[in-house]
Amino acid sequence: MFQIPHEDFRLHIGWRTIKTAATAMLVAVIYCLLERNPAFACIGVIFGLGTDMQDSIKNGGNRLFGTLIGGLLSIVVFWVYLRFYPQGGHSMLLAVLLGAATVVLIVLCQYFWPGGVVLCIVLFSTPVETYVSYALNRILDTAIGVIAAWLVNYFLPRARVVALWERFKKCIGISKN
Image (cartoon, rainbow, N blue to C red; front, top):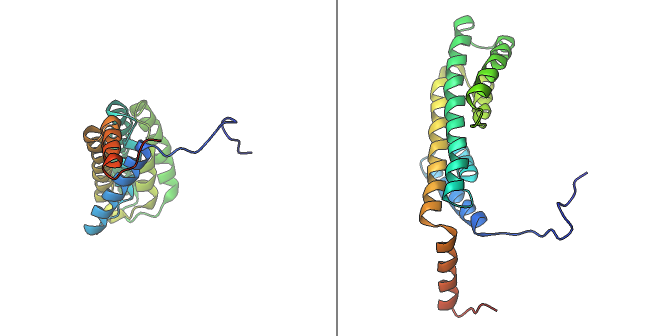
């Protein structure tokens, strides 16, 4: 059963939440204008925007490098699969290759865990004709999202956002009661 973490638990919407939501929304709007699916870029934003720049680099870097490793590994595994079944459609071999690739992925990603997502999506949800471009696009989209998160945290660290908010409140006459 679901339990509240502690008895004085309360929901909190802080500056990190607001910055993450605003950045994900901005990235999604830009992607929609470019007529691209923003899902992976937005995931990159959400995982990449940490409490401060150091946290963002760690979390976003893990997401980015994990996706890079998983994406490149999926291209290699799919290429091997297509040597046996050029038209696709034989998922038993793909399941065996996934098992082997997962071992390789875990060894390579001991510090970069998110690579498994793109590996599974490419192997089981991508048409034979587009697996390379799909994997490369997921890597690119994740990179764009993570970089957007890094830029926001670099240019708008918490102290700067709080100071801007306080100046704004002062300008419109809201006191700090």
